[in-house]
Image (spheres, rainbow, N blue to C red):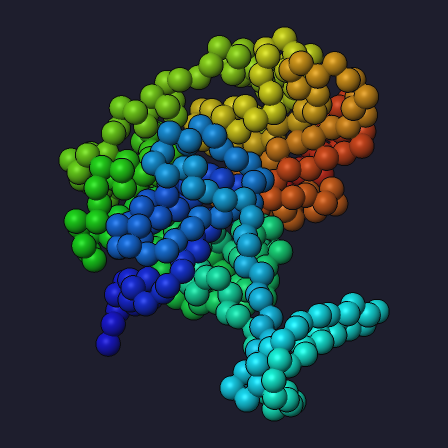
Length: 388
């Protein structure tokens, strides 16, 4: 009997067309995991594609091999085929008429006669016959890739690989390792046990990127001897550690550093520092020439430098650098990142958030001065109701 690890690669071996997808929040571990597995499947000469909702396209990882292969939507339309047996008659002319509730095909025989028994129909199967979801605690976190194709997800086998303790085990095969620091760590073990030859320099770089991103370059408290040992092996296999660290942590633009300074200047926290937040105005974006896409990196810095925080919030006016249209002064947006298995979606559900459990976006049709206390008070109230 095959163990779970063997079952995963047996399913990959049997599949003709594979879809790899991941959490729509585009965290580094998810992106790196998907790209590593994509490259491994390509080495096995499989037809494979990656797709993820463009909720938070984390372009800081665009240095990774095969990054440009990530798609933002699926084309899985099923064709309906009507067949006509031409053994007893030959087709002379084909016409069709479109009516209110029907489409009529008019087929004139060149010779012979067509009957009802000559007609058959069928629906083609979906384009993909296997889905692999990575670093995704629940199927809804896949976002529009799932929401727009629910029938496809229900009818197609799913392999679910993750390390989160709140994973809902939505796959037919669920490979969840709670002791792993990252999903890339799990993939390393799976791939190396199956065939270490599949890990070349590009695959090793992707896998190491996931571990470095998850541990903030080995600075977080969740680092383990196992993850350090795997990182060492990946470097020996050709992973470009210098490139990874330079791109993720040593290449902050001057604009981003200026924006970071403004965030720090207004940084506020609850007494126990479980909740940390800051605000940014449109003037801050204008003066620093930064934009909304830079905020993910700002949150990463806050996570790395305030390890005791459970919730990190950035509240900001949506006007970005170069935007001369100041008609959005009564709109406020916020990014909310939660740690330690706190569900951000539940905390701010009154604001109709978009995103996943640990990272959401909200928008209020109110000026920043009114929106800030409403958002913070709502989060504080939600935190007070959580079990201690």
